[in-house]
Image (cartoon, rainbow over all chains, first blue to last red):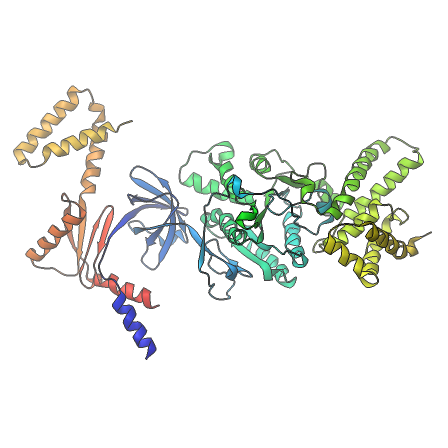
Length: 502
Length: 127
């Protein structure tokens, strides 16, 4: 009975008065774009509807010309035909956002791809939005722990920062980014993670999702996917959709982390669209606005002020370089936009360093402002010792005999380099990072033979986890090394490393 | 920069309005004379294009499900001209698939009062 009443009401409420609608007609369709005559009052970036024979397909008006409109088709262009009616919707492109998205895999229009049913969401986020203004922002001061020793100690990333990951095809950029997501599981103020896959193979994406699911990271992660078989328009929209998802959490006073993997493909997709829409090509055939393409995206990452709720959106864009050339067009653009970069060196990769981060070319412009007191205390020594080691190492190739002090420096440097190596899928909790770097810079590992370093590291963790868990707990809670704690750490290290005494 | 060809074309159409066949012929001759005197003959292809556009602008299609009597069709056209513009020239098409009502389409606008669309809307509402 209820259904009947409901239906009756619905039908009674229907408005049969037909309105004058603004329309246009498709005059040309090519490679995911359409040329439309009419659509007199359409605005830029407005969603339009192609009324095809079988189904409605959405599009976005991009080129507004005197008598024609150039649009991208969000769907299969083979279903749009010449002469099809195109209607205005009066809406600019937006996607559903909210808590319901967490744990889901979506396409750049917010539609589920994981077969887990409909996504309930009341809120919508704009795809194109100008980032927070100057007064709405605040300095970055809270660390985003990546769980990678070399990054957290030497190139710290703060919440609200934009740090570029760039490197060649073979490098482990994506893999490191996924480790960063996995590491957030144990973090105190856990950020919501958004992984935007742009132009990746479906198989690779499926593997990534499987890794995230297995490690339990999907609980706080949203995956936005535009794979290589999707039209260029989807690849173009994907990062903006990811930013919109993150902004929702930032505006709610929470922290969010968004990874754009990778923006090179995004620039390619935009180049493809721009060329087909006959926008004038510039350097490397990219359109003139390829800088703005990325700057407006990355400007949306921010740390909001207290008045605005204090939320943050951290962005980790990824760029693929060709043969280590970081001076190409797109890499230099994105380097200049971001607050620092982590350069993955193919040479170091082949030498077996993992992660193959080139410390000399990597920088974080936020610097130690985004480090905890504990990390600050030990990382400054680490930086200095590593720099000295690098210098001596080069010098040593020519010198045969060195004095005692120099030899000690070199031996310690070698141990530190060994210690900074870290396998994939093995992010370390912040307190463990502090403990092991403390051991290295204070010389506790000097007695350990070089091949035994990794074993010694394991022994130290095992010892502290089973016998002195309060020490780790203390570092985690206070985020500082007090003199008493330092004594405890030293005592523990002495016992843990006893078997390496000669 | 002003689109001069468009201005010429508009002036020509305005001058033509309300003239009989002989008058139109005379206007056309005079128009060419003016264009030649202003040394703008190289504009003629562009003017022609603009004229075509104006012509297209005034084209309109009225889709009906079946043939109605002349008076009813004229009445619909008259009312549509109030909504869509007085210069519109309607071409009547018969399309049984719209079931009933009518559809009026110009280059930029659409008024859809067909039974098919109404049913379609009900379906969308209920699904």
